[in-house]
Structures are given as C-alpha cells and as structure tokens.
Length: 419
Image (cartoon, rainbow, N blue to C red; front, side, top):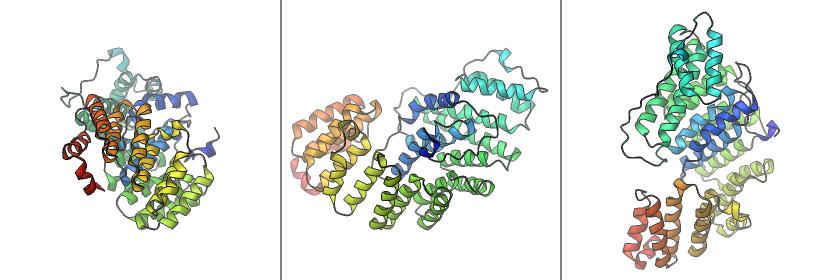
C-alpha cells in the first residue's frame, strides 16, 4: 500500500542499510501473537490510548527499516501489562538456552561483520545466536552503539515471550535491561533522533514517563519533521490530564502532517476530556474524512454521540456494520453501551454473544461475563448462568467473574440499584 495510507511514514530512523519488506515483516509476525493478546477491559482513557498505539504498531510493521518498524511495539507493551494468562510454577527467574561457543567468536578488528551477523540472526528469529555475538561485542567493542541497541532488541523479544508465559517479574527485568542498553547507546550517539525516539517509547512502555518525555523532546529537536515525536508525547500528556500540552503537541503533529487521521482522533479524545463534545465530534469527522472506512473512527464517533445523550444515533452507526465488524470487541462494547442507555439489555447481551464467537481465546472469559451481566439485567438469569459457567471454564481466575456471581446471588431486585 502507499505509505501515505500509513501513519507516520517519515523515514528518519534508517542510519543502517534498509531491510527488505520481508525482513521487516518477520518482526511483525514474531511479535504479533503478543500484541493481539493485549486486552482492553473497560472504557478508560488509558485503554483507548493503548488501542491507538496498537493500531500504529500494526501499520508501522509494514515499513522497511528495522529502526522504523520496531519502535511502536515498545509503547504497545503497556496495553497488555497483566493481560496475559498466568501460568503456575513461574519463579520470576530466566535461564537462557545454551549457545554453541563457536557462535560467540567475535573478531574485534571486524566489528561490522559481527554486527551484520547478529542482525541477520535477529532477522531470522535466532535470538540466542544474536545475543551470544552481541554480549561479547558490547565488551570487545563497547563504543559501538548499534551493538547495544540490538542487544536491547533481544531483551525486548525475550521479555515479550516471558510476558506471554505469564512470568511478569522476569519480563519486567528484560524490558528494564533493554532500556539500559538504549541509554548506553544514546551516551555513545546522543544526536541520533531515531535512538532518542525509540528509547522514549521504551521508557514510555515501562511507565518512566518523565524519561520518555525527555527522549521525545530530544528527538523533536534533532528531527522536528518527524510526526511520531509530538504524537507519542501527546499520549503521555493526555493520560496525565495535561490537556493544553497534549493539544500543543498535536498541533505540531498536524503541522508536520495535516493528513494524519490519528492526530485528529487524539484531538477528539482531548476534547472529550475537556467535556467539549461538539469539538470532539468535529475532530473525529476530520479523521473519518481521511479514512472513512476505519472502524476505530466510526466507533469513536458513536461514543461521542452517546455521551451527547444520543444513543439512538450511536446505534445507527454501529448496527449497520457487517456481522464480522460487529463481532469486534471495540464495536460490541459500544453497541452494548448504547443499548444499555436505551434500556435494551437483550440487544446488549446479543452484541457480546456475537463478539464471543470471534474473540481471542484469552478475551473470551471477559466477553462471556459481559454477556452474562447483560442477560442478568434483561431478567434472564438462566442465560446469565450459562455464560457464568462458560467464563468459569475459560478462566476461573478472571476478576470479572466475581461481579457476575455477586449479581446472580443478589437476585433481580438488585438491578434497580444498578440502573
């Protein structure tokens, strides 16, 4: 597809030779299973921001440079913190698999060849072989920033795998180690805009928001034409409630690229936080004009209409979609919310039932609970019990199950308080 159809197609990070489209997509495929395991359990601002980050990563994965296609995944890590299935028996410690000694022979006189070999191993998914080379290289050639950067990428990949297994403590350690490698790389190459941007997004994902903003500011000064920098800074300002700062950052973004729909989308989120729903509707209209078929913008428009007290209009935007589109959790959630506003709990329950059919395995327990709650509010406890059992089978430890269990124990009379 034409790069103008992608967000942030500004090629500023290519200080190394470009990777092929296929090599770049290898990274997208390797990390996509983690990304799609991420969860949005409610309608909070943080979850909306994380949803936007996920969309950016999916689209950036199509670009051609290693340094350009990878950074967005860092921020997406915040989406799934705690969102993966837990596994018992995890100690929080990790043991790297053994690597043949022959792999770690690094000629200090031929650093470029060692770097090329490590990069090739990374591109084909042989992280441990790359790690063996890089672990030696950062000692024998500690002045080489790209070695530290690539070792950081290995740690990120390992952390993602640990997070998928439910070993959060070990994963956090890997991500922190990755950030330290980026800091070392920046000490060696402080004027690299791409490194600053990547380090900022990794710090952002780790919750180091002050450090992230410092990196974003540095990246913005080094390359004021890169729209990623003000965009990601705006996400921090938005979640911190610094709405004026968020607006200023988004204005810079839209001056750089006035045709970026995510800029208008985020401005709509800022306007919603201010309570200026008319302005929010105008901004989301701008985003829809740029990408009229994008469900994210259509769903945000429905949400705004619902918050304006027009749930009927919100439903009109949603119910005309195809069953496959209505089965997406983002859409099902909005159909349910608008239906609840209209007192149509059966429609809300049916929306979640359709969503369940196509939900990711790790999201099914949550979706089942939502269907059960809506059937309970529709005064259909027998259906609610069916969905409760389904959720208990899928994930007996899911926090949401307790809410449905308590509702069914209280009986129909407690619905009046909820309404």
